[in-house]
Image (cartoon, rainbow, N blue to C red; front, side):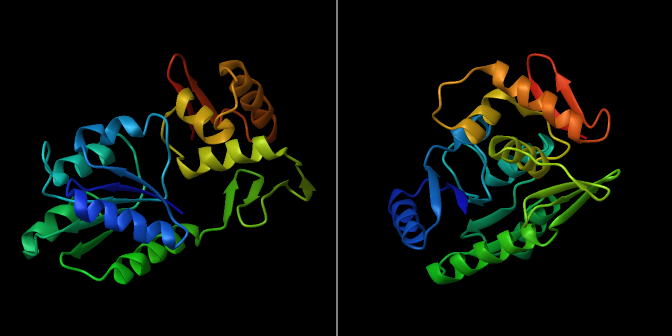
Amino acid sequence: MKVLLVEDDLTLGESLKEYLELNDITVKWLSDDREVEDVFLTESFDVIVLDLILKYQRGEDILKNLRGRGINTPVLVLTAKKALRDKEVCFERGADDYLTKPFAPKELLLRLQALTRRQQRNKIIVIGKVKINLEAETVYRGEEEIKLSRKAWELLSFLLKHRGQIIPKERILNYVWANTPVGDEIIRTYIKDLRKSLPELQIETYKGRGYRLK
């Protein structure tokens, strides 16, 4: 699991990062909330943990902006705000969970695990005559298996995870090829191969921006 933690309290942020990493969770911690939206240009996360009372922006506005940009990553709000109206606003703006301070770190861990399980429940995705099994990492067209390379599968699963969103090329490169020094042409090659495997016109190209799986 990879978590984006948005928390400007340095003591709390450091202790949460340490605790979650001890439980095998990768954490990117932002103490400066102005960096939140830019980080999604190059990185992908399983869950966002978002404080509401921040230095430069309201957490509620960050949540609204993320959803407005089509970023559907689950968001767990972590805040000292306890009023029902505060919770209502966050859920209306797309929050998936809400935990008030003070809290037990173990409870935060359990809630994060529950959110990721919820995301993984739908293991079979059907696109036209193509059936994709996320758990088995297989792709079938009818009864015929379409065999994909490891990188092709990682690219396909990344597009599926963000289905309906325009994914910038930089973000794809960072996720699939990590620190390997490759250029945009490798994405075009793999996209071309995936298009042969999926129904026609499923992957759209946005020139100068990226790709979108319909």
